[in-house]
Structure formats: structure tokens, C-alpha cells
Length: 366
Image 1 (cartoon, rainbow, N blue to C red):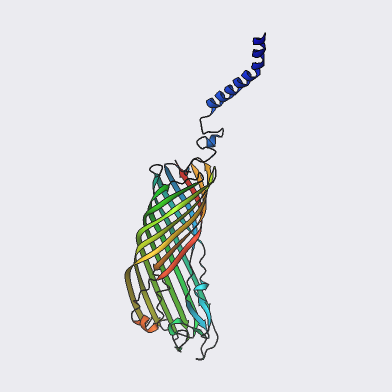
Image 2 (image 1 turned 90 degrees about the horizontal axis):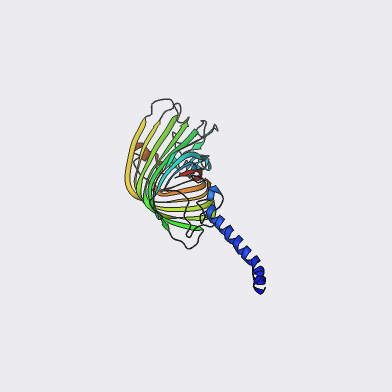
């Protein structure tokens, strides 16, 4: 009787154990360790591994539509009555121009990847014109003074007393790079870091055009034009790093920065003309110069990525590229009329240029 009572009292505990074992066995048959019931995340644990690794596959291809603007010029090109600036680089408002980025990456193992990319197809063009019909001290129309005489100090007919002044700038920019990306172990499960180093090529051309017309000296008047073409062909090394934060299962934030050390084959060619209105120029001068120098740069971008599917990742970000030690058209505009009329062959390659803007695109992985 006592043995029967013990068996009856032990039945509830035995039944509970049997139910628990049955549930565990069923769960082991339905899902492998580290998986959940969502097909999208069957290969992803709910909690990121330690350390977190980007979910990009062994091969990934990125295509972005980029909208960049460039740093505005800062020179002064026309003044009214010698003192009031009416035309300067501030009038050239460069809008955001569309460009393209293409990147191909190959993940060699858990720590190393090779990447090659192109960014460019940018072409900015801005022009601004001022006109004036005020009667000047020479009795003709136009009281705009030019940089060729330091804006009328002293004034000179044929260069000053203009009724029309126009400037234009055209800039083209392309760059390509090849990098090694090395993942760095971090103790935190939600972050990832990587070192970057590789090679960089940049092609930057900047053209500047100046035009002026004056009714003085009478009766033929005068026209002045100067065209400057500046080129920079840069090649060298870059080094930097990337930091990636895993926000949630499908999203992560990436901050990437690179420093550039480049050899720059800089050059400029100029063409100066001056003569009566509506006739063949009486003064034509051609000049050019080239010089090799070291240029420095920086490339910074911040990206928010969202994984739409296991193979497609959307991207939204902002990028800025700074270049120091470059030849620009405006910087090589020769404002000394006497030297420009003989041989405009001086080279200035100490300029700075900044490109920046947003981008959006997709990364396809497999």
C-alpha cells in the first residue's frame, strides 16, 4: 500500500518531465541551433556573433548614384566705379551634379577582402555676366574695372571702362582606387572595424574663361579674353579605416576615412587675346607650364545600409573629398596684362578643392 501511494504521488512529476523532453525533441527537429522560424533570418542569429561581421557575401558589387558639388572660386573679376565688387567667384553657384560609383569586392576569407572602384563622370559648368551702361569719365558707356589694372589703379582704356564682363569655370573630376580591406577583431558583438590601404588615381581638370568688352578707346573699342586650362593627374597611396555599427538585424552604419598621398603631374596652358571690337585680335599670347609635386587629400564617407533581402543591400550616405596642392584655372588666371600679353606661362599649383554630396545605391552580394 505504501509503495502504491509513492507511485501515485510521483506521477505528476514524471508526466511534467516527459512533456518537457517531448517539446525539446520537437524543437531540435524543426530548427538547427542558431536559427529561428523566419526564413529571411535562418542563417542569422538574433544576437550578432562576436565579433560582428558584415553580412556581405564572398563577392559584392556596389552601384551608386552620386550628387556632388564643388568648392566655389573666391577671386574678384569686376568692380563698378573701382570700389564695388559686382563679379566674383561667389557669383558662380555650382549646383549638385550627378555622377556614378561602381565597386567590386571579393572576400578572400573572414579577415581580408580586395576592392576596386571608380567614382566620377562629374562635369560642372558655371558662367556669370555683368553689364553696365553708365557714362564714364571718358564719355563712353561702361564703368566696370578689371583685375588687369588692379581695378583702375591706375585705370587704362582698353582694359577698364567695360560695359560687359563675363567669367566661366568648367571642372571635371574622376577617380579610381584599389584597396585591401582587413577586418580587425573587436570585443563587442555589435561593432566591426577594418583597416584600408591601397592605390588611388585622380584626374582633375579645371578651366577658367574671362571676357570683357569696352567702347573705349574710341572709335573701335576693345575686347579682352583670357582662357586658362589647368590639369592634375595624381597617383599614389592611401591608407585609412572603417568602423561599422550593427544597428539591428538588417541595418548597420558605416563610417570610412582615408588619407591620400599622391604625386601630381600638374600643368596649365593659357591663351590671351586683345584687340578692337568686332575685328581680329591684335595681341595673341600663348603660354604653358608644368610641374610635378606632392599633393595631399582626404576622403570621408558615412553610410546607412539596409538589407532588403539576403542578396540586396540598400545604401544611403554622404561623402566629402578634399584635395590640397592642385592647379586650378582661377588660380592660374594671369591678371597682369603686360605679362599676359607676352607669355602667360606661370604655374600655380597650391590650390585646394573640395567635392562633397549625398549618394544612394545598392550592393548585390552572393
